[in-house]
Length: 157
Image (cartoon, rainbow, N blue to C red):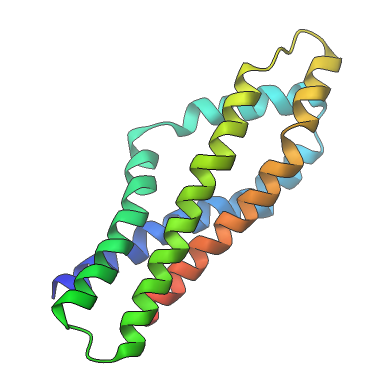
């Protein structure tokens, strides 16, 4: 019962993150590619400020915690008699943890660097964008895949 509740919770919060990251892949980043450097920097800075709210932070931290808890409880309790189910729970936890670690070690530092970059001139905005956009988008796609893997594996587990 507890493993099921933890797994269901992990599926929901990892699904929310996968959806958020996927929205950036499909809509936000392609739209931002069309903006001038100055518009891009100001717009992304606004996103960086807006996203740091309790609703996002709760989901962001709950995703790896619930996935890992489901894997541990599922393993220890023996609730999942099938070894494949336990393995899938661990794959889900790994995908979720990978996404979390990518966000903390890559995307957040890039966001902070963009927020702190001087943007007094168009050339400053161009430099800030070049040092940010491609790397951020690449790792956003990877963390999106991590959460998708987590949702699929946890659902099957």
